[in-house]
Image (cartoon, rainbow, N blue to C red; front, side):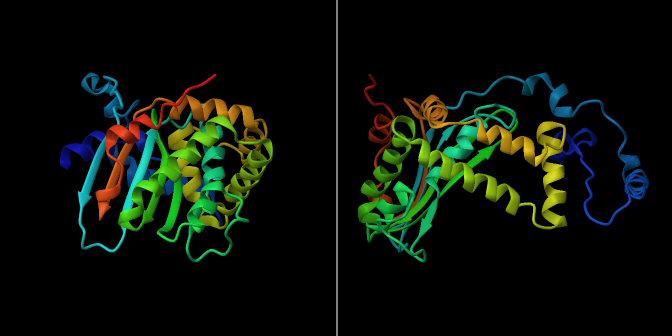
Length: 268
């Protein structure tokens, strides 16, 4: 743990951020007072360690812990995507919003806007799902976390994969516009208060090296259409090796070979 902290928690990776009623010079003076003893580095130790620069190939995988005493089966399914700065990240975020999320406490059935939510709402054994898009500096994970009753998990998992395929093949401009509006609304809601604004400043400084204006994000979102979403989703989903993790009564979760085969379909 000490070695990990020394390698990753270096001065070159620290961002001091502030939001609200704070004077810039005062914050600068406090930073110099409490952090000067850490010294200065032109680059993080991680960047100077040649042994850590070798690229790592994502191979997917399958980890499942069968526990038939658990009432429900929990499954996370994901594919490798891209890092923060990659232009594909915006279409993937829109695809993530198009998938959406759902649980049994939500009203609606066949009239829900998300195709996956409609399937889950009409399947009594399905309890909830949540899509996610997690990014790192040079890679990412895009996927879904879903919960259901063990005996029907093969069918429920198939719902998720089929919805991903629909993103690659037949998502419409209307669906994309809805997802774009949800994404832009979420970006604004995440900045409701000085604490989330401060966290956003620090996160963007680490990810992009600058604070990206909200208007710039919205401009990038507005420039994405359905064809671009289909193209980017196909790039990361079609014929790719997924990563799967399951815990609970997972006997009916598809085996990895059959799951992997679903990520390949004939294209014209």
